[in-house]
Image (cartoon, rainbow, N blue to C red; front, side):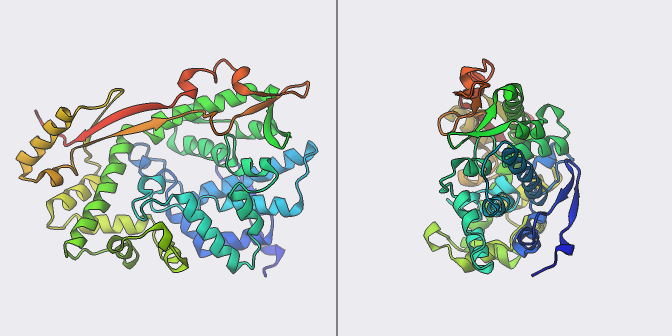
Length: 409
């Protein structure tokens, strides 16, 4: 056990001073599993478009915890009953909500361990830490899984207006230098309340919610789904796929022991155990970058050139449009690559491929944002806000892309 004298005050560029509320939070932050988040970039490869976007999951997790402290304070002031144990559990759950992210965050989701989301890995990490901390995380895990009878506690962790979204939009827009994505998270938290066990927003906060949803739409299309980021992430994914293929064929590739472990083994969700989770915790962005720097000298044309593209930001060309690209359009690009570099169709497919991206600013199918009127009535925000009721914000928008090498036609 540590003394209260060690409870630090951290200086954050977004909120100013962030206080660590108690010893359990301090000890969790000090744990190697959490310290690893210093080596996981928050926005994946977005720094190839926005040079300032180099902040980490460590920054984000601390920011979320800070906002959770503010939310608890506001709700208690308004008469909402949150016990001391629930308060601690909320701090723990939001602090650890992203602890399961792999290298480059979303850019490599399902690339290291196929078919398992970062939320599922976060839960496994939390269960491991719960054993380490003698069951202290049990309530936090219950809230994280959405199983607590106080529904609003779960919504603070995962919902339309959770502390995760309130931090990452504000933080990411700051580091990317895109003020259009900035939101007033403090005002949104001030407007929160609870009615019928649901997290609601007081009616006077409707315009802040509108700004939040519009900012979220902007950040996805302009930043998270920027076409250069998309093609860079696909190249990185293809690098891992090609490396696995070569190793399976018997080729020796240099990389960290942790990365080699996951490149050489087929892992299923049902076979994930404590040992494998700890092995996963040894992976971070540095393993991937070190491997890419090594593999650029590989004698395999595909792997070598993919690595050089990523390292030198000499990326594939990408076209994005509303309608799907035809088989003919893709095959034309594939044939050009095959002829120019004497590659098979499978090899050429690492350089010419198509896919889709989707964006949904506000989804009212699973969870809605409810407003609490001055008369105490709870209503769906779409019934009040014409802007949020717009199909542009409430319908899932799908766009199609086609990637291929930059060549002179």
